Length: 143
Image (cartoon, rainbow, N blue to C red; front, side, top):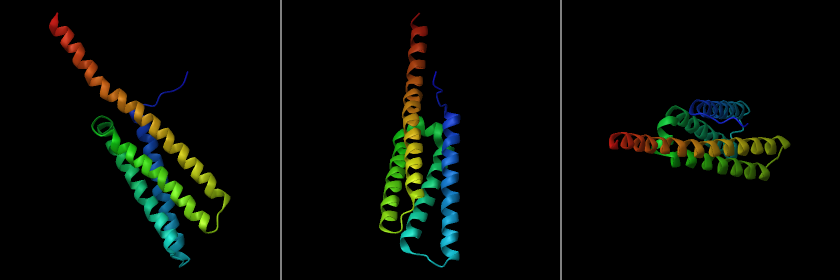
């Protein structure tokens, strides 16, 4: 039997993904600054990744509300994240590609897919729950 994610456990994944993204990109910016090699591609990738990490943390904070009110906002950030991973990999292909770049991209896409699938399922459940409650209350009042 497969385990289903709850809002709380999905929130934990968003916090983890956001925190790791922020930490990695802050570290990357620090390394670039210390090496005084603030090339535009490296800085661009790090700043965009930092922004995505902050967006994931925002989604974690507002997840329960957004699942009902605006699931497309969550999905939009996740799709944007997948595109950013692809663009980052392509930019790295133009420079010195390292095998770790492919591994990071694959892991990033798998996490994004996992979050997307579970966000879709939980948003459908969250939106159908109030409708089911309204039907039950109407059935009781009709008796």
